[in-house]
Length: 218
Image (cartoon, rainbow, N blue to C red; front, side):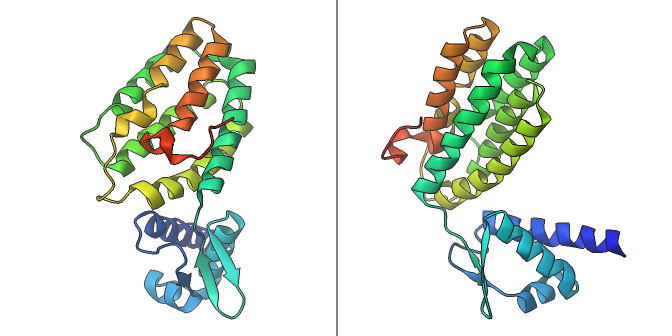
């Protein structure tokens, strides 16, 4: 029974998150347990656990006797997450980049080819960008750092959805991943300072334009 409840909780958690990504639920919208129970056709317990987990992860905010509000991410929120990524990814790369193997580089270059495709949609593009950065840190051999990066990417994915998964927003997707090759080339030649410079430029291109920020990253 406990395992079934856990699986249902994960199902509801992921379903709500997916609905937020797709703008079925928008920033500021109020979700309530009764509606979630009816929509996902499960009992109160896994729904409540999923909603509380989403609150803990900064996706929702609990409003007593009212419901759960979808939190709107701001430019400052994005800036802070990118600062965190620069510290995390940059620190791990500086200490452990020599652990990256030839096979790792081959896989990273393959992922980067998908990141360079402009004839796609924002969601698919950002998924490949996420895979590239997670694989890069994973290749360094620090499981805890990889887990923290994955958690940060969940929130950044929401930000990307909030600002860029709108068909009316016209951006060239490859512009926010244009520094991937430079990062890899610098790492291959053991030029770590150069690699971290390109990493910083890469993060500052979030969303395809550094004009998005009022201040640079780092």
